Each structure stands twice: as structure tokens, then as C-alpha cells.
Length: 415
Image 1: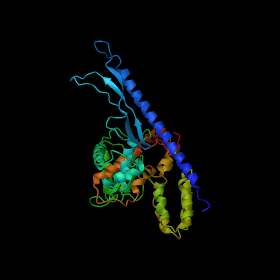
Image 2: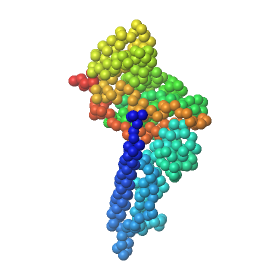
Image 3: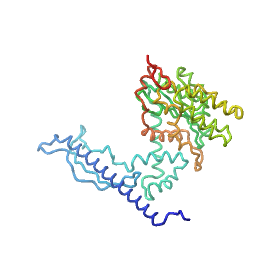
């Protein structure tokens, strides 16, 4: 094996990795320690004027508590928490106490660890298997992650999901929506779920998760119930454009709730559907031809590329061309919106990327799960991802879209 990596190089690489992790861990510890010290200093300074009858301060520093350890994605980090001597009392005569907002007394692991738990649950790991699954990530001595802890966390998540699902939406405006049905291989009461997901772009370009519900085979009725629920909770104004897979029962439900909303079929789904109807030997050329349609600079150029695709493949592969042509207008709707938004509107990628792990077929799911448990875990996974979603490109142009300004080939039409 002439290309094998020498053993000493493997050891050097591992040593370098360990050294880097040590540096990152120490940097995280210093940052955390500094933040806690500054928090305490600010608290003491804020109450510096409060004194007793002898003129002594009522709030002062009082050394440090014993070291504590918190679990993080970098491993265990040890720090010391400053003590505060607060001799003030409340109206009932009880002593006031300083409580850190960065690290409450009960916190023993960083939030990044808790974001990992829903993902593992969705992968089909039962409550009893969490400890084994987390050992490779947190080490064999990771405390506080027992089955009881997981059960408590699940209850908190379920309460969070219930409150989120009932939140009021009055005054909100979502210019664009992305919709999709997420299938995961988890057995629930009554069968395997199809989870209906709705995401929206606000008038300032921020992406938000709007709905997570279970449905019956992505049916028209299931989607209609989701949309009517959003409307009942105050979302009166409909979107300007909705992006989704053409196979959804959603498209029959949409005009019954928001009849003025435009429709954009997802090019990712459509391309896959078309290519599946072609022999593998033809697929590379067909894929390049499809790219020339949705990557064209103008609708006219896209229409010509569309016609060229049909003329090339219609005679031999009519099923593929019918699959493409039946949604022609809805595949090209994005050309009537700002060019800066095209990359966001041509596919349901905001949902696809977020729920990629949910779509994975699990093999370790044991028995049937509850409906609420599955929905809750999907919700928590999406909630963790939502914090990293970026605003739409050219989000200032959303105001023009709301006002009904016309765009041709992505460019604003002069009034």
C-alpha cells in the first residue's frame, strides 16, 4: 500500500488535533470566566449606592464558589463562579440573592448539547440508548444525561411546542412561503407520519418557522387545516408567492384560503421527478438542459430553453416531458420577482436543508412513538436551525413586492 499514511504522521495529526481542541477549550473557559466576572461586577456596581446605617455597602463581592464544570461541544469546561454577598431584603424580609443569567445554578450543560438531543431522538434512539449514543460525543463520564433527564427535557419541549403552536400571528406579514411534507420512518399511532412544514419570509426578510403539523399523505384536507389554523390565529394577509413541490395536495388547498397567492414549483423536486423518468445514460445531458432553463437570465431565454428540452426528449421520453411541461407557468413564476430573491424562490431549500436529518431512514426505532413526541422533536430540531437562518438577499425590495410593484426578469419596472 504505497499510498498509506505513515504511522508517525497519523500520530502527529492526532496530536495536532488534540492540541487545537485544548486551545479552543481553554479559550472558551477564559471567555466564560471573563463574562461571569463582568456580570458580577456590573451587578455590584449597579447597587453601589445602597448602604446600611453604618455606611457600608449592602452588595459586595465575596470571593469565589467551588469550581463547577459545564458540558459543551468542546468537552467539559471548568470555571469558578464569583460569590456575591447581598444583604438587602425584599418586602417579606427575605434576603435577596444574585442569580447569574449566563449560568443559572442548575445548568450543567450548554444549550448546544440540548440541541443535539432532539436530533438523536429523531434518528430512532430510544430513551434508554441516549447514554450510549452520547458517549462518543461527550465522553464516557458525561453526567446528567440519564433517561430521567431526557424524559424531563421531553416534557419541557412538549410544553414549548404547545405554546408555540397556539401563538398569535396578528400583525405579521409573510411575503413568501415555503411548504413541504416531511416523511420520516417513525411509526406512530395510526401509521407513519407525514409532517407538514410551513416556513415564511417576513417583510424585513427574516425567515421564520410557521407551522409543524402531522397530516394524512400530504392531502388537500390536511393542508387546508394547517392554513386555516394560521389564518384563525391572526395571519390574515396571504403571501405573494408560495414555493413547494408540485405533488402536494397543498396546491388545491391554497386558493381556498389565499386565492391571490402566486405559485412557484420547486426546481429541485421537479428536476428529480423528470430525471427519474429517463434512462441513466440520458440523465447527465437532461440535467444540463434543465439547468439552462432555471438559470437563464430572462424568462424569454428560459422559455426557449424549455422548448428545446421538450423537442430533444419528447419523442423518446414523453413521460419526462409531460412531467416538466404540465407545471410550465408555475416553474417560471420567479421571473416576476426581484432577481435578488431568485436563489431563495427557485427551490424549497430552506426546508430541505433544515430537515435533511429528519428524512434519513432510521433503523433503531423501537415500537411506536406518540404523535406529540414526534412533532415536538421535529419542532425542536427546526427551532435550533432557525437561529442560524440568514435573511433574504435584497430584503429591502420586499416592500416593493408588498406594494405590488411590477418586476420583469427580476428588474423593477419603471412606473
